[in-house]
Length: 254
Image (cartoon, rainbow, N blue to C red; front, top):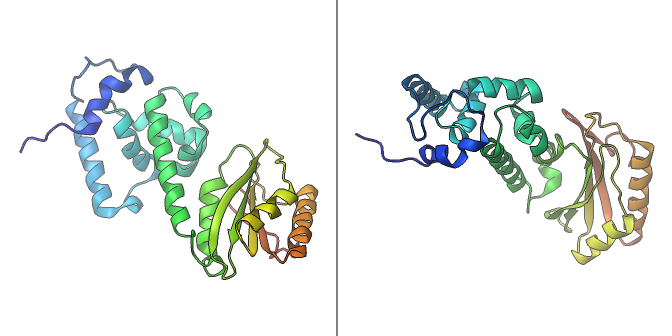
C-alpha cells in the first residue's frame, strides 16, 4: 500500500535553509533508502519497546527526524549529546546555545522545544489541583523538569488552599546566573489575592549545587514571618540543582 504524504516529508522545502547543507540533495528528493530503512527500524523499536528500548542518541534521532527529513541525523544527535550531556540537557538547553551547534537551525530548535514544553505540561498535570503534601515525589519531578536546566535563576511560588491542594504555580521573578530579586511583600500579597492558606517556595541554582546561600536563607525567613503574620503557612523552600534538590524543612532551615 502506498503511503500518502506525511507532514515530515513536507518540511524539507520549509526548513532547508535552517540546517547544515551537506550532503546536498535536490530539492524535494526522497531520503536515501538506507536512511528510510534506519528510521523505520528505529520507529518500530520505539513502538514495541518504548523509550527504555532506545539509548539517548536514538531517542534524540526520533525527535530530529521531523526537523531534518532527508539526512542522517545520527551525527547531529551525538554532537548535541556531547555538548549538553544527556537527552534532558539537550531539550532543556537555551535556544541561543542550541543554535551555536553546527547543523542546528530553527527547525531543530522548534522540535526540541516542543518536546520540552510537552514534558513540562505532563509533569505539571501531575501536581496541579492535587494534594501536594501527599504528591511530594510528583512535585519534585515537576520542579526538576521545569527548572533544573535553566541558565538563569528563577523564583516560583506554589500557592495552596486550606486542603493543601495546589491552586496556582507562578513564576515571581527571573534573575541572573546567581541571583534573583524576590520581594516578600509581593509574595504574600499574591497569596491573599488567591485566598491561599499555604505556600511552597521554589528556585533553581544554575550552578547545579542546591546549597542555599545566606541571602536565600534570609529571604526565606522574611517571607515566613510576613506569611505567618497573616495566617499563611510556609511549608517549604526547595532549591533545585542539576541532579538533586534541597528542602529547607528537611535541612532544619525552616
